[in-house]
Amino acid sequence: MAELKKLRSQRWLANNDFRSFNHQSRIMQMGYEPKDWEGKPVIAIMNSWSEYNPCHMHFRNRVDDVKRGVFQAGGFALEMPTISLNDAIVKPSALLYRNMLAMEVEEMIRCYPVDGVVLMGGCDKTTPAMLLGATSANIPAIFLPAGPMLRGNSRGQTLGSGSDAFKYWDDRRAGVITEDTWQGIISGIARSPGTCMTMGTASTMTAIAEALGMALPGASSIPAVDAAHQRMSAEAGRRIVDMVNQDVRPEQIQTRAAFMNAITVAMAMGCSTNAIVHVIAMARRAGHTDVGLDDFERISRIVPVIANIRPNGSSQYLMEDFYYAGGLPALMQRLKPHLQLDQLTVTGKTLGENIAAAEVYNDEVIRPLDKPIYAEGSLAVLHGNLAPDGCVIKPSAMSDKFLQHTGKAVVFDDYASLKKMLDDPNADISEDDVIILRNAGPKGGPGMPEWGMVPIPLKLVKQGVRDMLRISDARMSGTSYGACVLHVAPESYIGGPLALVQNGDLISVDVRARRIHLNVSDEELARRKAQWQAPPPRFERGYGAMFSEHILQANEGCDMDFLLTQRGARSGEPDIN
Image (cartoon, rainbow, N blue to C red; front, side, top):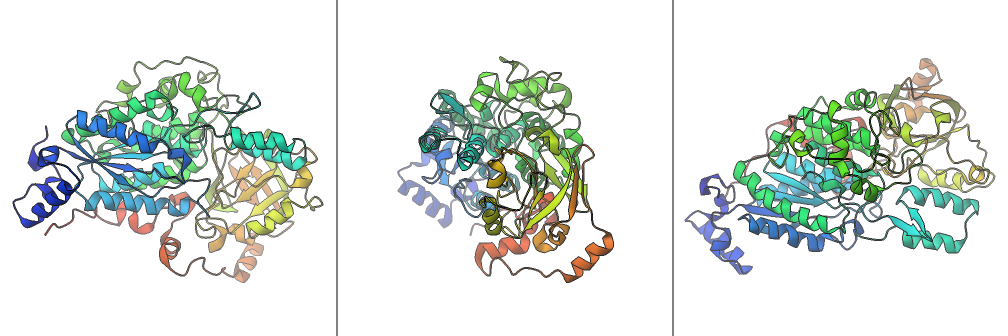
């Protein structure tokens, strides 16, 4: 049992003054007795459940499992609901609100009597958002992943969320599947609570949380509806009480080496391109301002993709299969030569100790290092005069034809005009052209929507084309695939080189050389820059205006500049008077 003087919550509850009287009476108003909290760690369960978020539907019940664990370990648990970001529904982009959720988590921890926190998230932006907030608050914290949904199924065929949605949408546009087949796909592709069961952003980020040491071993791989998920939730509740008693905080876990482990695991998983934006933000919140694109590029050169999960390669396997094959601990067991195993985790043990007994049960799902899906890591970072601050592509999920390609630019300043061309059966475009979408970045989108997975034009779909080179300052869903160059920085909306591209310009991409080049002279680009006019602001008031004023570029993690650790010391504890 923790001593009273060591518990942060006692500043609110254990003094013989009017304020403590008021705080105690309000907790008793909820039906609790002083013996429920006296001398016990107060654990906040930050729950992102919402009826608008099917990924988190089961959290309404899982919170009871967490409470059970907290009470078993001698803690006092209170649920604190947060905003909920469903990536599929929130518009224009859930990334626009990632930092809002991060701020909410940080400030709710700071202003309430909380000694430790369980963070319940999973749908794409909730994982990084909650970790960002808890990192800045820096009290004991443990992340509880929502878990992937079950495999999709329609007419006896396995379906993967996102990946198969894009695939069959093109087939529908081409007229090669019936309306009945399409309706079966709609109803069968998402069959249970949980996050996307492909290797999208959700499973990427929960795996990163586990590899970083902020989630229990194996937690990120457990399907949402498996009974093991309930047991893991209760264990998270028990463990957070111990973490408070042992004073294990995020700053002790989230070392630079731990972030390198997280990037290594992400590459081997065939991760979402969104990992770059989120991990850079998370690392910089933890004080590691030197973590950036160069780390992703360096690690991608030496760590192969060994998780055989859609959308990488031509995989038939999904996250449910990955769990049965041994899950993330088994994958990390195979990655041991590339990991720093001495890093502390939320268990109080090292990463090496956590995975010591892990085994791989299916070598086809979790490949040996010498038989990878892709010989290099999932992502590649490109630089050049079109992206001086970098951009990203996912070679493990694209046609080899476009690893080295030069094509003619076909330029669009907004998604509406792009969509008009995409649906035009007579569009003036070929598969060797390069589609350019701009004004879709952090400020321009706003919030960098997942418009970067530009559909293949209908004209080409009907010709059987399923991939072509597309370049934008947007993001794309982690479940997507194709030759999509993303996160071009600086973005076009603030005058980055992408804003200067004209129809017919030749653009060269060489993935192996990590190069992207606009074949226009420096003098011509300077002339175009002098004529460029900034677009009007996206917001005039509210959170959107604050976001636009303070958001950083993709290569900097899209955090708010005023939230960065290097801006000064942590905000500190509130006065209680």
